[in-house]
Each structure stands twice: as structure tokens, then as C-alpha cells.
Length: 196
Image (cartoon, rainbow, N blue to C red):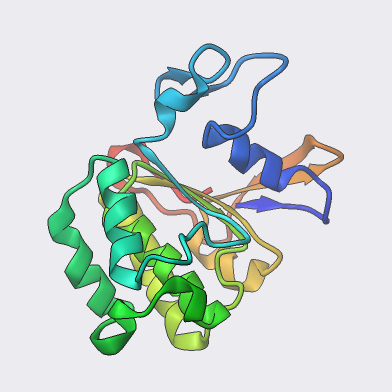
């Protein structure tokens, strides 16, 4: 978990790990990819849920999730079960993203992330705009992903919600790491994966 005040650099770290922000100094390796040389190479194995869901307003819920899955080269068979799991089935699945509430848009973005099954989950304030049911679904999906060997890097202002999921906490201020500690409930996960 990344923890720190607004402007600490948490979102910048997530964006850099996703290959969305150029690295100007030092070394940056993510899942074996050198981000200074080939920052876009990591995009197929990384999934990011940012502040604003990256959806195409003219595409339906199902089309948005399918598009993300195809772009990542992931299994298209995961789309329908994830849409149903997140309560986006029925008529909602055929609704253009432009007509969705903020919470529904967030669920669609989350569905796209879960269906892609990335090796690295980058979550920026992941519980924002979600109701309590969707927050629980997110937490369950995060536990499942890390138990399957994925790693998650979470920036949040809700430590009470995220800390029980974390096995490491990184404190940031002014764009720098100011401290690290083990989470309240450290967990051993297969394949060396962790929620940070």
C-alpha cells in the first residue's frame, strides 16, 4: 500500500509502473521490463484502475470490458462471468458508458481489470465511488488475484479499508519514499506475490 498526503507522488508511481509516465532518472524495472527503454512493453501485463475510469462513452458496458480484454490479449471468455459478478448484467450490460452513474462506471472499469487478469494491479483510490457491496467485491477480487500470484500496488486514503489486505506499507511525501513497514497482517502468498 502506498500511503501519504495529496501530492506525495503516489499516483505518479502508479502511472510510471503502468508505462504511462516517462522515467527521467534512475532505473525502473517492472515485471522484467526496463521502463526507461521500453515503457509501453509492460502494458499487456499491468492493469490500472485510476481516479477516472478509462471508458469509451459511446461503447456499452460489455463492449468496454471486451475492448480492454482484447487490447491486453487476455481471455475473452472471462468477460461475461465478470460482468455478472459485478452486477452489470441484464439491461445495464447494453447501456452506453456515458449514461452510467459514477459507481457503475467504476464497476465497469473494475470488471475490465478483473477480466484482464493482469500480473500487476495498480489501484489508485480503488474504493472511490463504490457502494459497500462493490467495495467488498473489489476486496475479494484483489485477494483472489494475489492468491493466484498477481501483485497489487494500492494507493489509498482509506488505510482502514486497505491495510488489512496489505503485507507492506510504503509511506511517501514530496515524491520520495519516507518509510516502509510491514502491514498489520503480513501474509505469505504463492509465487512471492503481495499486496503492497
